[in-house]
Length: 373
Image (cartoon, rainbow, N blue to C red):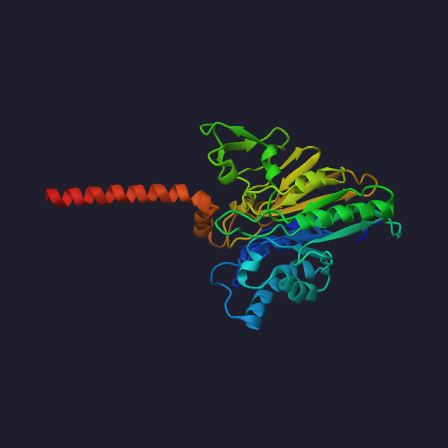
């Protein structure tokens, strides 16, 4: 990757497409319009490209792999048709289809033209790499760097796996190697799927009665939050950040030397915000897929624009379905109902408990009426 002659470089982050073989036409319309209008230099897919759970992908072995590949090829077509380079990491749902991230990366994604990024040495699986962006003058000088981290999957018993400490050590070695080559730490951005525990540090804890307060779970059980002071006008917090229960020190590592300017994640489909903690921007990008819950026509993609002359700064903005395509969707009833569905099992539990209480109360009334009659 190299900066353009005018010194610019545009990245598009696409996350949580979470599609099935019968891909939503709205998903494809969004991806097509975003690629056409923004014309990025690189597209980064940050996980949950497919809905790996459930029964939508059938078969075993090569049959299953072919079904997954067919969906992925269609999802990437807006990018591959335009010969735009792309890189990919994985979310918690991709591997749940029954194909490992390593197999998906090597057998499916790497078979597509313009797939870049080589899996990190000593790190098992797929979806962990670094991508230097070199100077526009044709030299081998690294001006900027991108890290893609595989942030893991669901944990047995609920929640999410702790972030892999081996990836943290690999990052440190890569950071130092780039410094040795270029005589300075290289400004960088991290892309991954699951947010870091420190995302709660850019939020403001509030009383549960405050308008717009969002209830959190697990490590922040029964706490309520709103966007913090460092977040930006127009940002959206619609669900609590779903973080690992155990903090293995990823943030401390990336904040240590000042090379990482920002982290951008997906995972929580309705969130789209950026806040700053210890000089690192922590950003969410909303989901892009219409076959899973999301923030309706506010689904979208994120663009990040780099400047070769000022590599320690960047500009970012999102482009939504509403802006690019319009307000009409192909399945308005499903879209509305899915937007109201609980995002996680933890969020569903209070609703289930209330439903059980209501059913029990209704049953008691019916039994009482029967006795009276």
